[in-house]
Length: 110
Image 1 (cartoon, rainbow, N blue to C red):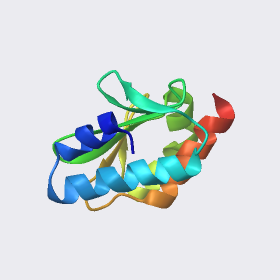
Image 2 (tube, one colour; image 1 turned 90 degrees about the vertical axis):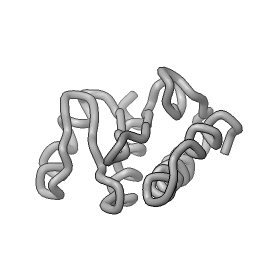
Image 3 (tube, rainbow, N blue to C red; image 1 turned 45 degrees about the vertical axis):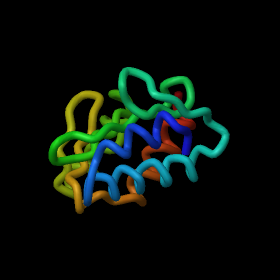
């Protein structure tokens, strides 16, 4: 984990820190060749392939509108809130298998 992303995740505590670390490690494993950096104030992989961020009650995943549209039926069935370009994964309910699927989809469609 790069220094910037480590510092970003280090601002969080408890379950939030655990879930953010899990999301980071999951995306890193799915996209091992993509460079990582902080962009728009959040951890980013590749040239804006996928972003994630911590919020008060959830991890925000920012895969873009096409990915959200593609995964909307799954997100709805799992009870995850989503908007046009963002997905909210509540702390303690982060499905890392879904995160892997979204990251791979983004890699293949961006």
